[in-house]
Length: 230
Image (cartoon, rainbow, N blue to C red):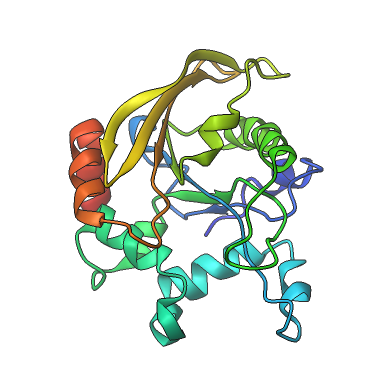
């Protein structure tokens, strides 16, 4: 993980958790810069210290390092944190490969910048509106080519315009029906003129078919998918 952009991240007042930026993200070909957008973190109000650890600005980075890369989720009961093995299967085809190499190619942060108090907790309308404000700041800092939203609910609250110079090229539209869920796509243009594809997929947790979404993404962004597996 690189901390090169931390000065810019720390200037975003509403960004409570610093994004994960892989060591090789900044030097990746422009057309292969991928930013994952998760939904939120979840804390257990009955677990001592759960809320406190979520107040650590580096918490997202800890989750990627410990849970995603070191595969801590394999020790969890009831298949908790299944989002990460499902990501690995979707983009790599298995969960046994070198996931450190994969995560060092990409960026990751959570759209909702406050923890839900249960794993069934849902963000409010205001949470999603604030999420798009944070997204505007983050995406102009990390300049991805493609953003993949791990969950399609944020598309419902897509802004009619951004307060900054970010331009909307296309609003979210249907991008296929996959795994009993709507896939969405949109496109924006950053301050520096770079165009960014936004893809919204089903949240990779319950009732998620990685095979279906793998086929869908191979069809939609084949070059990116090949590069991630390389």
